[in-house]
Image 1 (tube, rainbow, N blue to C red):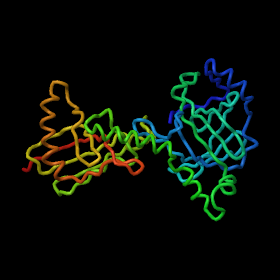
Image 2 (image 1 turned 180 degrees about the horizontal axis):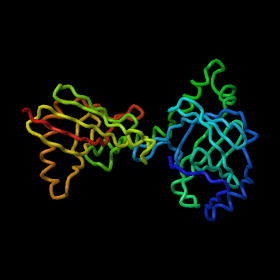
Image 3 (image 1 turned 30 degrees about the vertical axis):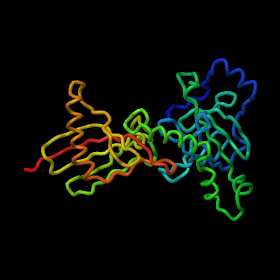
Image 4 (image 1 turned 90 degrees about the horizontal axis):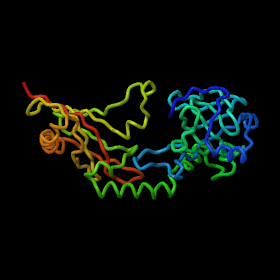
Length: 312
């Protein structure tokens, strides 16, 4: 999420399309008519209508919000397990700032809301990057109009958030592409259910890298599944070594050497050494589970930091 400092009265410009927006919508001055209504996000997509992109990044519907006052909003934080308050700053027409982002209200009704997340370049909206849309239903609408009357709110929301046929068709095409070219880095597909690597030999230790204090970095939380990193230590090994490289884990859990992170003049020689490490140690001493998306296993990229320690 792009972090923006909300400024009251900031005027956004969308170029020639702005006049059309203002003609279509007179705008709202506040969310007063919607105060006290709980809304649950049921769908989050790119402008393609699909929740996935070609890299494997997925837009997850997870927000629960409530307009506390005409100029403030509460949004549930899973990290803090509570509703967190934010001021709402009205810009003009259907444009607002809250929760450290800028938004265009696409549709606004007591039973449903659709928001477009805006990416800004200075005071202008970057239309190419403002391509995420969030659909919300009110708690009343979900409870009274959808599903069985005996079904819980949580169950109904969970069903509404399931992938659509359009999502499944897109993922199927990306999985097929990745699995046709398991040695091609450009064809791999990342996944929330990224490739899992575990040791089955006491001489090998495997550690999945985590981003500490991600809120203090510029990295998205998605970084950990888009670019999964493992530190592997082999002790004892035939000699001391340290290699940084990527592999493609194919749909069957086999590793294919990807990029080697050394100076260009050393790449070819290092590739031969690393391939030997993969063949001798990694394929024989590791359990490797391929990535899968919507139940479909597929090739994905994993980044490895492999260290060998020779016995004394």
